[in-house]
Image (cartoon, rainbow, N blue to C red; front, side, top):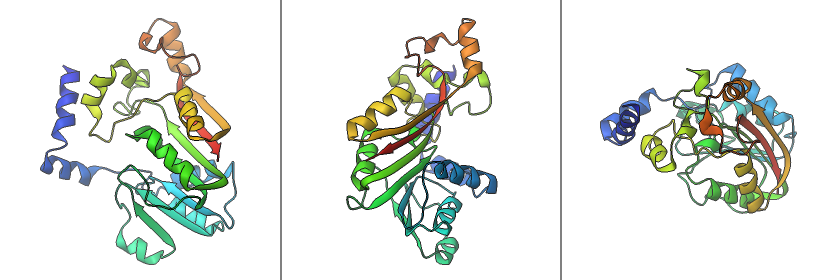
Length: 249
């Protein structure tokens, strides 16, 4: 049974040698793809400039090129914060301006009111403690500072393999989904547009822009009587496959 198989994979990934093998094969971010880097940079640039600003990017993985472009655009300082260091020593040595911070979750090891910009791209959907991270981003931002997040709301287990399974992760109850995915890179917290808005407003943020992308193919399937596990969702949440969220402290 597929569910049993996925639960077994979720537990196997904690076995040391399996974890080590998976880590060697895992790539997070765009891995220095020039096109990917430009896409991310352009997304941020729609809402802000970078000159003389203190900037921190959350969870870019192997994609350190966005930070470099932000620095070249005139940022006063650029920091990266991630669960581990994905950037080679050679890159760090060649770019001494780049501040790299390891953050396993919980309180960020940073002072309050430090940054003008907090940025992330397809990171927030993987957060295990989204409320904590959102509160922390509010704390480290200066008054009037912006946070810009592109959040992928789709299923990551069937990522790009079957368009009919865009939201397949929503089929399962919370406990079953946790058993299937909690320890794996395909884990997503399954929060929807309205929930991301509510969490940010609860933390004290004001919404500047909220731009969801609607998956029309899933809407079509739903109207034909398929994907009925989406029916309990709010109308605004049902077919949103990603969310570009811009908030201000």
